[in-house]
Image (cartoon, rainbow, N blue to C red; front, side, top):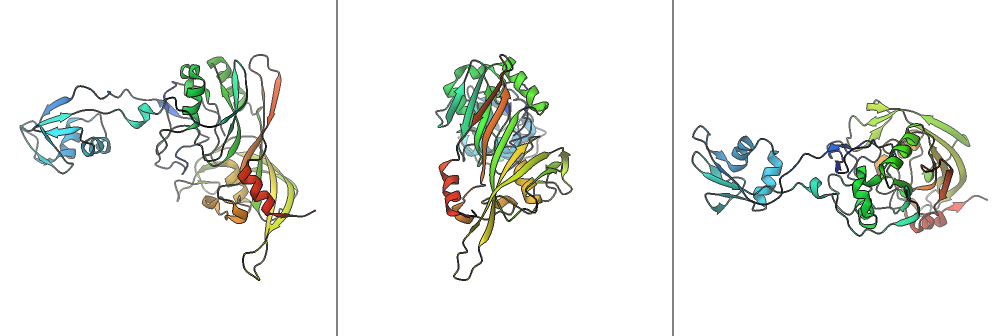
Length: 354
């Protein structure tokens, strides 16, 4: 989870070049407002100038419409929104001087992403200033490349239409797609500013329950290792020579230990530990990377070396407790979330030590 600076409500998530596999960067600030993109309507009519060398349609269009990327133009051609001399065209259609090109510009996916949609999620509590959400695993928090629709943000706009007037529909921090649990959303700009400042001051309490591989040498500890993009695998974060590292601090304590029975007749049992993690900072994949850096990746977290033991089909991480000061009066508020059914089933498949 992380702080997100305020901005235009139609912010844009980072591109998937170097983004995480959830289709977004859960703990980093969003980009600024979207560029204005013309809606579909009257076509743009172009005539290939005399000085233009005959070439493929997409290349010629890229030279004539420099405000649009070539990949976007190719998409318009493939979808039938570009005609040459009145006829349907293909990307490799050869065009030259005096040819007439008709282009119907289409809205970009990101410009349509902030639309209300009926999305299933639980509201734990709300007030005039905030909403506490229990996000299910599998739900992306915010639209981004590969996930322009069906996100928590779309669901918030559907259930609370007034959030259209608040930057990023009031979202001030995030959870990974496959992490479940509690989030707070601001219902107005004043509350959003208050909550963001609490996150920046590290006074928001965020507690997670994680199931990890192995046994810990110490019952508790702190991981204080800056996080950044992995220099070799762009979808991963890393503490080993990361790109543009940021401070990251995770406090942890072991809760209980157990074993998962081996699958073969003589296979050894796999040790498992239930860990309580408390975030001091909120960086992309912070708990996942910090636990893996200790040699204890999360069960089901294939990206960071975890295995699908005991039926775990996602990273076994749940945001179970959330504490913040009420923006209306600064009174402390606390919320808790029960472990979801899929994680409970994994817990029940583990033979815990008494």
